[in-house]
Amino acid sequence: MMAMWARWAPPLERSRLMTLSGAGANFGAFVALPLTGFLCQILGWPWVFYCCGTAGCFWAVAWFIFVSDDPRTHRRISKEERDYIIKSVGPQGTGHGWSVPALQMLLSGPLWAIIITQMCSNWSYYTLLTSLPTYMDNVLHFDLKSNGFLSALPYLGAWLFSVPSGVIADTLIERQLLSITSVRKIFTLTGLLPCAAFLVAVSYAGCSSTLAVTFLSLSTAVGATSAAGVYINQIDIAPRYAGVLLGITNTFGTIPGVVAPIATGYFTEDHSLAGWRKVFWVAAGINVGGALIFTLFGSGKIQPWAITEEERTDAERQRIRTGRVSAVSPQRRQKCGHAVHHKKEDRDQ
Image (cartoon, rainbow, N blue to C red; front, side, top):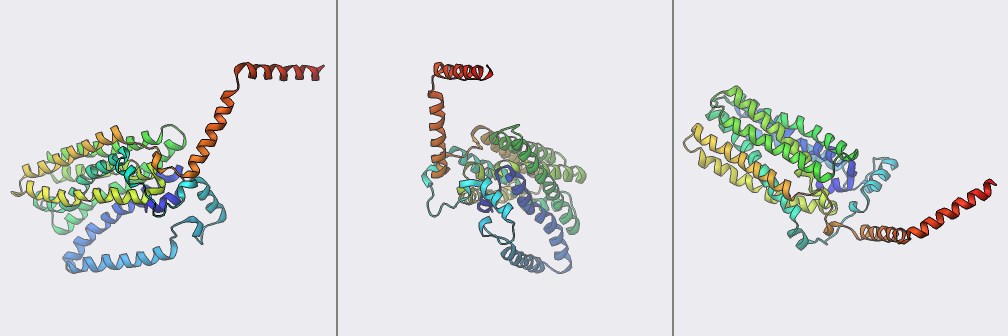
């Protein structure tokens, strides 16, 4: 998806378009969790896989019919829209072929900031995604149907929060109120720090189901604002290589999906509240660490290794033009001004 948005999303609309498409993951979790609880209880667990697999097949058919990887090859958009997208995206919307600056990527500080921050953020995401039903069952003692519905509430909040965050981010950038770097850092901070605070609050909610569900829902909902921050930062620093960067960051980002459930199982071996408190405290601390790293090392500027030859040529021409203008001495500009003034006086006479 990141590679497609690099070709399809004009720079001033990237945040809203990408958060809108990414919000589908949260909406999917919101629908799937109660639905799987219902199917398991009524039809049995195999029907969960039958239904999800069938839905995926229908979606694939719709995708192949309506989606094109480049606006130049899409058959259903108007010429005006196609020209607008191509002009807005510019040279960064072109493919890079097999040429990838691997060494420069490996040494890129902003890219490593994205990788580490996404790993930190994903720790809490995967902790809740994989362990929340267990927490609802062992600590809050909800039945299967209630468990599925209440486990889904945080993802409804995330869906509702992520889309407006993209609109606000684009507005701040479009009106030049803040730089892209500042916008990405602000939305990353608003996503990770309040999320950490609510996770700590959950750890002290005890067996109060109302407080626990409220804090968990707020944690995931507010955390979704980082969708307009670090989670789309790849396309800021290297639009041409956004697809490659997404593959790299997602590869590292799924590591918490393996480690977090193992850590949760270790902390909650005795099924005690103290064990779950450790789970939430660890997730909160890792979130704060990710926010700090991105604040210090994150960037919204296109990296030198991602600039195209066409952009380098344009920049060189602009530099030459600027140099020629600045090379004109102040005395010469003053003489030219006097000459124009005298000519105007002659015409008046």
